[in-house]
Image: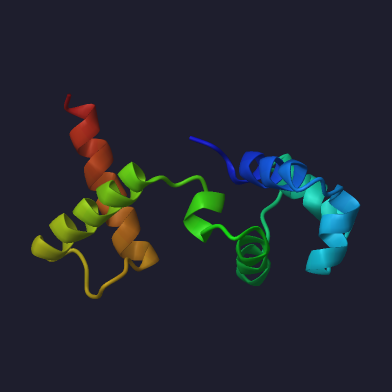
Length: 110
């Protein structure tokens, strides 16, 4: 799975942008871009959406998700809703942690 920093660096290089230039376009320092590309830090949601818009990609792509990952998440959400582990359409942090504990327990039993 690609990490955010790998995807960002690849997109930036493909557009022949320096870290300095991308930082100026996003309104951040070059060091922020460098930290993102080395996975030492992550951008805010607002900046993440600016990056996605600029490079014309989805935030899912930037975050390293592919269609298989998204399908698995959808199946997990559906199973959790059927089991009464989810109150709404999206996981709360507590619901997500419960679901992940169940997944880990099942994985350990293999």
